[in-house]
Length: 256
Image (cartoon, rainbow, N blue to C red; front, side):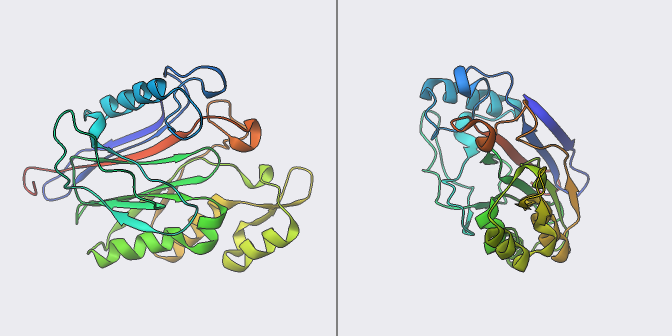
């Protein structure tokens, strides 16, 4: 279920954090969506997706209603969530049309869904702020990572750290030359070559470059979604599921 997980307990006035990247195993979806598809928009059986999302929520020790998703747009919109009064049996608010989510609420889990795009998680343990970012090629070139960092800083964050999850690597993301050139104009390190020597883009390298330029320390997790059967990949499979990066703040008694 979890390809990567790190849990840091609260320490005095410092918030803790529980953040994960899922794989595609341990779920109830069938066929091309097997097994732990968390995307409700890809044509999978809705009951299977709900079961899979329940399993993700259980892994965080929260209810399904406490997961916060986005209606991802491949843009750079950022939305603050959390603090909503959702009673047992009620549904959470509809997912905002956004590519970044921010919260200061330890009772919710922020979730970004991907199947080649680059997932980013951010946290400031001093101020108690967390975020997730959906950074595909359009999001990287339009600056969604920087927009999320700037929104966090406007809320008081000054000690951010980031985890960048696995996504399609540059060798597997062949594009037209003019598309690579547009990406290179934003982040030169994103311009690369595919396995066959054709123009390609390394979106994650561009995102890491942008976060580093913003002064945010980054942990970049290894792996290529197209090369790994443990991850969903739209480029490899076409119709397929979505894996997730998800983060929850853990509040200490001293700051609760």
